[in-house]
Length: 445
Image 1 (tube, rainbow, N blue to C red):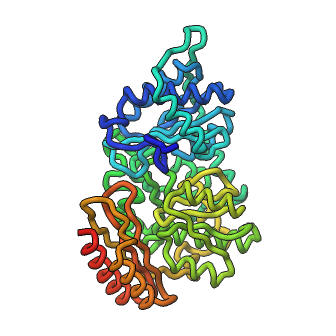
Image 2 (spheres, helix red, strand yellow):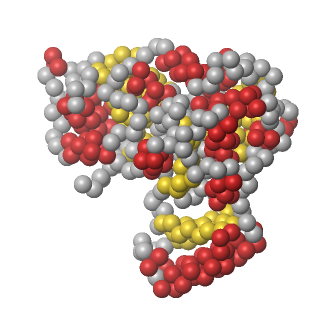
Image 3 (cartoon, rainbow, N blue to C red):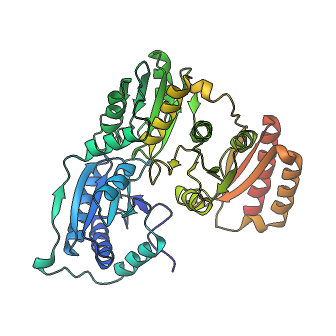
């Protein structure tokens, strides 16, 4: 069955444009409630980030779920991974996140977690879509659900985050700047670090409903880089709006992306004999990480872009560690989904255990120059089947040999072909990328 509403990461779009409307959210809550009630569900967790439209959608979903007979437990603004965790610990049948992650405030979206805190299975999403095609019918009054405000949600999650690193770990002596993107972690992230003993400077912690991800957070790290140098901090941590992603900044103000963070965690787990397999990245993961892991004797696998695909490969291989360059890192030995705060704590624990700076922990990894060129299409075509593009691909791969790689990938949301080339030789990478993009541009025109 083809899904009409659910994408790879839930339902997302511009507020006020179908399906991101209060009317649709009301019916979505009812449809989800009908499906979840049929699986023996009794209560559903709802959490959100800090964008202003969250109030409206929270109320609509609550009404829809209640009309289908499910009780609703409201968390308020909380990180996406916190909602997954609390769904598990409160033994709810599902968790719902109202968030558009790193997008601007005028976008919003809905994601579901299953009872075990993982992404909702495809067949359940399909069943919800099937219910959406039916007429909404409210339960009798005696079979309506209730709504409860969970008052200790933040404290529960803070304790969980601290439990993901060894009990004796102290961050005393570290000066950390944390950028919360005016998003869901604006309160919990600095408190986690404070309670572990760090000296914390917090920015991006004044959400007003409209400023989420606006010039701050993991998608806009320039301010954090400058501030780390100015304050002579040990490092900086940048989360995105719903705090499932993290990137970091070392004491010299240099960015440390998801690929590099994966390397640090993998080597630290390896040193502790706790890696249990290899690392899963995506088609966009830097080739330098793959080669660096190979040098360390750590297997590597590439999944399609998106944390859902990373998770699927991890489960298939029985591995515990994977992620994306954007900073969405999954540590299955600690939690069930990508978690920016938990991932940052794994890095900090490695620094403390090895008595090294963030920069020193990167000594064994190299990142290759990577060029990404977006080529617009007037209509979607399978450009990889074009004879000239096929020939250009063969020639590009021959020039790079085993020192680089080429990837042509259509955008999932825009009429674009992404031309990505990377390799050890920066000048060659630039040349190959431009020549290949020119061929693709001619083919699609």
